[in-house]
Amino acid sequence: AQKITQTQPGMFVQEKEAVTLDCTYDTSDPSYGLFWYKQPSSGEMIFLIYQGSYDQQNATEGRYSLNFQKARKSANLVISASQLGDSAMYFCAMIETSGSRLTFGEGTQLTVNP
Amino acid sequence: DSGVTQTPKHLITATGQRVTLRCSPRSGDLSVYWYQQSLDQGLQFLIQYYNGEERAKGNILERFSAQQFPDLHSELNLSSLELGDSALYFCASSPWTIPVYEQYFGPGTRLTVT
Figure (cartoon, each protein chain N blue to C red):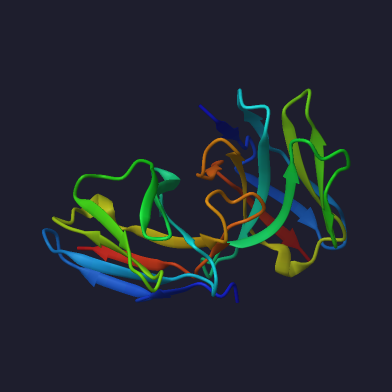
């Protein structure tokens, strides 16, 4: 069964600095996708970035990049130049392409300090 | 705005009651997914429908049921409600049977059972 682990319940970062949010996963399926979602205090789930298991390059979307290390089964999210609006809960999620459900980690609460 | 709509936004009801949550997917999306986010269980996949047919089932209780109608909107029915059913219920949609790239989440329905 697929499993996602986020070991950082909370993280703090200074405005304008970079921060890395950790995510490790476990799956026996060779084909899978990895996602990061942001959930602000208002509750909605905002898609940030996606990495496919066969993608050769790390995914990037603006200030977000995904540090994908397949052998280590890790998919860390890097946020560059943090902004106050980045304060939110961040979820790592995975889908095996043989299945159809997203499995989420427990989340990391990021606080950006001015 | 993801294009996925959910109603109502908030719902407060008593134990033993029955409620219906409604979801309209993005235009053209055939798959609808339901997720439950609670403090003790985190984000959990409940069920998926694709073009009116049940496609995958997760940790959905027998007291819960769902359906997808010909116009592709979906309803999640929760009956014999218990205090532990209090949670944020998300609907998500994607164009395909499996969310190869991403699922688009609605704003959620916050259910409070008193």
